[in-house]
Amino acid sequence: MSAAEPAAPVSAAEAKSLFAGLGSARALLLAVSGGPDSTALMVLAARWRAALKSGPQLVAVTVDHGLRAESGGEARAAKRLAQRLGIQHRTMRWTGDKPKTGLQEAARAVRYRLLAAAARAAGAVHILTAHTLDDQAETVLLRMARGSGLTGLAAMARETTLMGQTGDAGASRRPAAGPLLLVRPLLDLPKARLIATLDAGRISFCDDPSNRDPHFTRPRLRELMPVLAGEGLDAKRLALLARRLRRAEATIEFAVGAAASAVSEAAWSNGGPILLDAEKFIRLPAEVALRLLGRAIVHAAGELPLRLGRLETLYDLLAQSSSESKSVRLRHNRVRRTLAGALITLTAGRLTIERAPARSPRPKPTIRRGAAGP
Image (cartoon, rainbow, N blue to C red):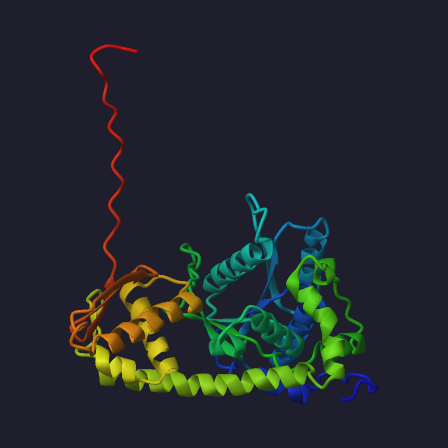
């Protein structure tokens, strides 16, 4: 589709392919803010479900962050549309104090926590979000600006595991214990086609002005997209880059798994130290060794996030020390560092990664009193 051509609405056949593989689910939770993307997600999901003889129950959830005066009305509008479409709807609210800094990051974390709780309560394993091709392109640019590695530049996948989220402890219809899956069925569709779909159905949606607020990074990047597209770097090209990097990412991760077996001196046990042959480890390709080190640290300590820059610094130190230790003069060279809750020790040709010991509390200062006052 060229810039001069109007965007085409999403057809029924396309909608069927968007939700392929989800028909056997017990329930699907739809994250619906009331904006054009998530409204289109709800409409397309409803049309897809109506064409099935049997299929999952659809539950739309709107998270009201309470950050704008209009948010309550937008949640009510989303509920009215859901009822028209025959979809259950639930509004969940972010209560309590809001942080003065990092507001968007905090709101995102709360949103996924509340969505996870709603999914558990509804008996759903899948949470569907309305991320689009435009969102994918912005994510690539955002991570480029932050200096992300290959994993970050691979951006968003269609389906990922929602890590670190817990459900509602009182849910009576909770499915068997297991991870929640975050699914992005609209990831290959541009936003313009979703708006065209809503326009064709005469379906209204809300407009969140924060999506244009230049105080936030994404709106600033959004303003750059037409300029970049003029140079050939449009959303499709950026999304293609992410897709190719995800392919490379999968290949490297496979190599890391094979390398773990090749350099480990024993099987990795839960709670026990991980022992690696230091010489074999250093001979690995740097990217594979770096990821293996990160995987071992997370396995041993279980703490996240693990920052790439700090991991690279530790790997460089290990590589340098291992090289120096080959000389007779430095054959007893030793490295001992902590990172992300793990203790990493290099000595005598062995690399050991284990949980770091708990820090001892600092002793309180002793106040000595003289026999006489001042």
